Figure 1: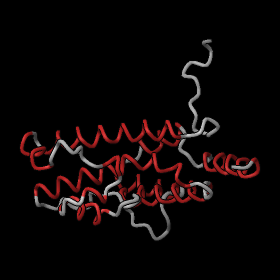
Figure 2: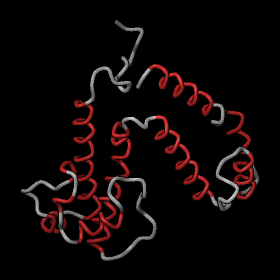
Figure 3: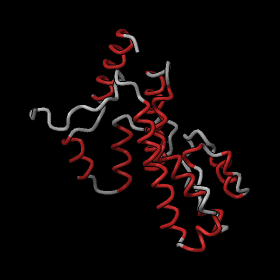
Figure 4: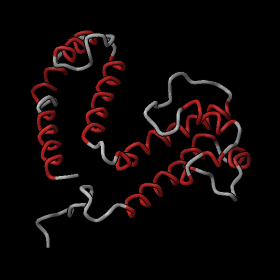
Amino acid sequence: MSDVKYTYAVARIRAMEMSLFNSAMIEQLLAMKDYDACLQFLAEKGWGDPDTPMDAEAILSRESEKTWSAVRELIRDDASVLDVLFYPNLFHNLKAAIKESVTGKSHGKVYFDDCSIDPKEMLRIIQDRDYLSLPENMRPRPKRRMRHFFIRETGSSATSSWTGRAWRSSIRRDRRRMPPSSATTRSPRWPWRT
């Protein structure tokens, strides 16, 4: 990112920070009498859009969309640096598809839409056992077959164990690939210690 783009991004983020809730706003929100008053308060503070339904889930979903839209706009050059931020959502979708495939029941709207693999495609991959269509870091290890995996352990803990390990290893691998000059390099945990 060039210096000009970086300066613009920093200024834009600083301007967006002004709309964040401070402790006084949080206290006001906590003091509201009921659910509808809380939603009205959020709408008055600019959360959601005029056409967003007065529902907490819809308002939070719209705010998330606006935030990611702003971030993607700022990082147009190399949006792949954001992939690591979507790993939890992608692995959640994998876990939900495995559970839906094993139980045979749909559990409503449990998938995240903002992932590199569409939720319907993820479910198809799991149901058809087309694991080669998954990214390499999400594929089950060859020694462990899915059938054996679910017969041996409960669906929930087995799925969490498998997806958790894969998610952590994906983050470690991508962190090693980042160039040292990247803006995401770690700062020391305790800067006052030498």
